[in-house]
Length: 219
Image (tube, rainbow, N blue to C red; front, side, top):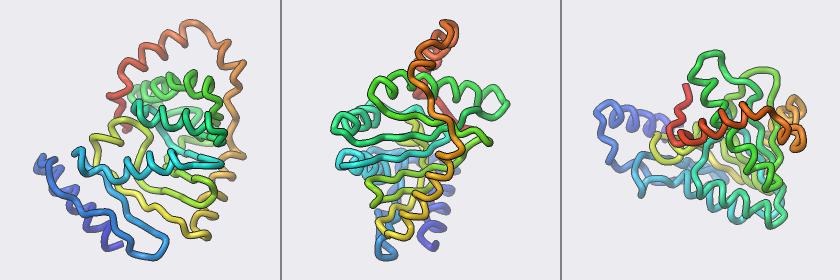
């Protein structure tokens, strides 16, 4: 908790002063099986991003993702597709609907602009139906879990201040997976055949939205 408080204060101070080039604390293990990972808007300070990429690259059985937004960079999409090509099961839970304001409606369209590529790769997409979903979790091979502030989008990966906790603690991973399975039970899988038959004007709006996916900024 102390490390998280310190990181928040550090991020807040430097963001307020618009000093993005500062040295944040290194990734540290404070309790056995748990690590604090941070991201800052600087190439050499993206421990959280690179750690996530590495774990996806080494996944052997399953990758389970939950995120309110999905507009990742090319590298993330590539390692996700390669994992599926290796036979790894990949499931993503995303919100079915966004908030009512225009900004979030656009963010939803940007998210949906990735569906074709995901479905073609054999990745399963699930739409969470009860309400807007703010959970941000990763579970890999039932042995690793990541939970925190990181959205699966380019700004969050490269330009925002983010902090997450990763763990290999069996009980913790089990609890995160239990919540994932609960959310999955409240979600509807996007049917590939139905998705392909969506109206042309929707496809056009998705293409237009994709052109600006690097600018997606969640409210």
